[in-house]
Amino acid sequence: MERAENSMRNDPVRAAGVTITDLTFSYEEEREVLCGVTLRIEPGERFGIIGPSGAGKSTLLLHLNGILTPGRGTVEIGGLPVDRESIAEIRQKVGLVFQNPDDQLFNLTVEDDVAFGPLNLELSSEEVSACVEEALAEMNLLGFEELSSHHLSYGERKRVALATVLAMRPEVVAFDEPFSNLDPAMVEHLIDIIGSLPATVIIVSQSILPVIASCDRLAVLNRGRLVATGSTREIASDRALLRHCGLDFHFYCDVCHELNLLQGGTDV
Ligand SMILES: Nc1ncnc2c1ncn2[C@@H]1O[C@H](COP(=O)(O)OP(=O)(O)OP(=O)(O)O)[C@@H](O)[C@H]1O
Ligand SMILES: [Mg+2]
Image 1 (cartoon, rainbow, N blue to C red):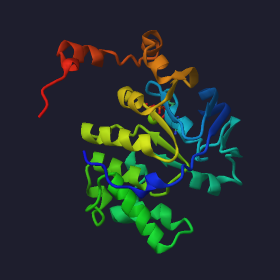
Image 2 (image 1 turned 135 degrees about the vertical axis):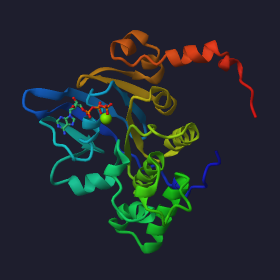
Image 3 (image 1 turned 90 degrees about the vertical axis):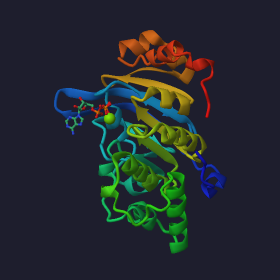
C-alpha cells in the first residue's frame, strides 16, 4: 500500500517516557484487576503488552491518561504524575485509542471527529486543518471527510478512531487492540505508521504477530500481574511462558510451514 506523504514524520521527535509503579486497581471490592504492576517505558520506545482476555490490559491503559485512578501506586508521563491537577496536560501528552471505536467517535462527520482534539489545542485554523488532513491521509481516509462515522464499517470506524488520536500529535500514543477488525493491508500499513510515529508507542493486544512486528520490547500481563518483560525476541520465543498464559501463537508458523509459504509464495 502506498504511504501518504506526511510532514509529521519530519517533526523533531516529541516523546515522553512512562513510569508505572506498583499500580493496583479494583473495579469491585476484593477483586484486584491490576496487582502491583511496575513498568518503565523509555521515550520513543515501541512497547507491547500482551495478555489473554480479562488480563487487565485495557484497565492498565485507562490509567495512562487518568480515566481510571489507581487504588494504589502511581503513573508518571515524562516525569509528570497523573493526578487530578495534571489531567489537562496529561491528556495533551497521551493519546489513547480505545478498543471500541464507538467510544471515540461522537461527531456528525469524520472530519469533525478528527478535528475535535486539535480544535481544543491552542492552534490556528490552518494548523488544525493541517493536523486533520495529515491524520486522514495517514489512515487512508481522504475523501471520507463528509461521511458520518456511524455509517462506516467497523474497520473503517477503527481507522477514524486512530486518526482522531494521530491528529493530536501526542507524545505518547497508547493503542488498545489497534489491529482488530483491520484487513491485512491495513494491518501492514498500521505497523508501518507505528514504526515512524514521533512518539512513545504502547500497544496492548492479543493480536500477537502484529505486536511482534511493531514492538522493540514486550511485557506479558496475566491475571493482573506482569509475569515477564523482555526483548520482543525473548518473549516471542518463550513458548512455555506463552502457552501458560494462553498466548502461544506458534501454530500460525506451523500452518505457514505446512503450506510451504515460507519458501516464497507466488507473487502477482
Ligand atoms: N467497568 C468494569 N466493571 C467491573 N469489572 C470490570 C470493568 N471493566 C473490566 N472489568 C473486569 O476487569 C478485568 C480486566 O478487564 P480488561 O478489560 O482490562 O481486560 P483485557 O485484558 O483488556 O481483556 P480483553 O483482551 O478481552 O480486552 C476483567 O475481569 C473484567 O471483567
Ligand atoms: Mg481489552
